[in-house]
Length: 239
Image (cartoon, rainbow, N blue to C red; front, top):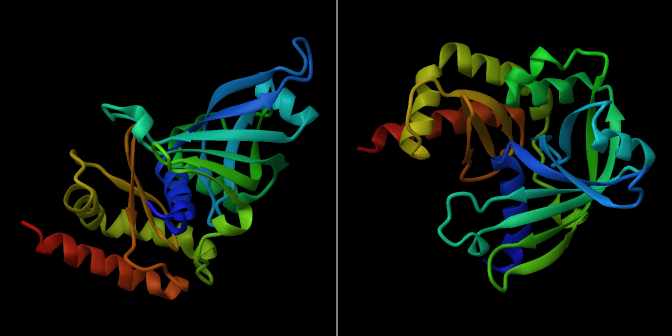
């Protein structure tokens, strides 16, 4: 992994994982102590993490007092030597949001959350990323500023995403299954698409998530169909 690869490694980690460890600063006794908790995460097209939090949770009380937080994305699962694997800590400020598109992106990533997302004591939060600290393995360590983490942008894709995902799941479930089994090497039936961004697509099957990257980033929403068809062709060409 070169220095130039590190920002993309961080973006890939954030998009591959559907959960993270959230660290906040407790406002009440024991005030001032760091507090870590497990949260479900979705990541927007601009790499902003999206959270759904309960008002009763300690981390939510902490965020209301001080929005500075960090999220640890751990990509070392399943490795014989975890310390050789990548993990990234993202620092930023969390704020409550009322954005229907971000809510929809989170719920597509975590469909079971729809059971409680509408409760009065739950709300969505968006993290504005300030910087990230990547540990990519032994000796592969670097602070990365937010400007370096900005992903490629595809004109109109964020607005078209919900329709693309709905169409793929309704009319091309066989293609999604090929993506998962042939191109990613995942087992089982029933994979669905939960998101598409300029750098790839997100899939889910029950409690399992998967990420499939495009060969080249999309530059506009109109390029999505061509890229998805090309992935099907590649999958069908495999034994």
